[in-house]
Length: 317
Image (cartoon, rainbow, N blue to C red; front, side, top):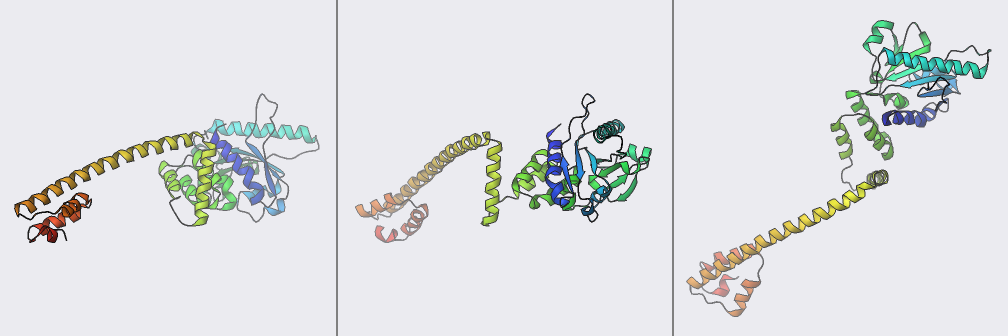
């Protein structure tokens, strides 16, 4: 299982109980004895009465005690074989529950497949029935099989676990909407694991611009600390780049200082030439003033004065 899948499962684990007010929780499933047949996770329903007021698909779980959830993120296959494998895992869980609860259990294990969109093949082959934005009952399996098209779901806090399955522009829209609503650590996980566009990823990172707001500064500090904790090599890289920039800055400053000193020397020489041609004799004190002056604009002003002044002292005013 890849990191995007882990992030999506983590979001379900963290958000489900809060969103449903304790009505449902996420559990990592045990391995089913069939070589290795393991679904992505379960929604365990403990307070179905609290689900009725929530946006679909949550409200559809109010008649269930457990729902198998299959997550199909960007890059995952959603062809018929992928759907059949998901149904196989659902069936394996059905058998497992029958073994655990005994012959008196006559329940049916529902399955929800969460993907970015409804695939064309499924639309043509099974004629799914849309009962809410982004939510489809897949016939002829009826309520046992829901297909949840995350790209079609509205942006609602209660639907965040499903929305992480979005792709393309819909994922970019979700990322922009989500960034100010979660902690910096969560946002960094979203930026790291979800396949949003590079431009949006950079846009969200650049939102942490310099500010005097203490709250935002604290958030920026937390982001920086999280990055350093997760990637210790960043500190070494930052130090190396800092040293390289310091060396470059010192070199450039040296070049600028050298150029300025050269212009000062030429300006002093030009001033003295004008004074000499006009036979305006410099006193030792005035000559020392010219030599000590490090302001190019001042020397150039003296040069203009020397053209019309009647004495060296008057030129250096």
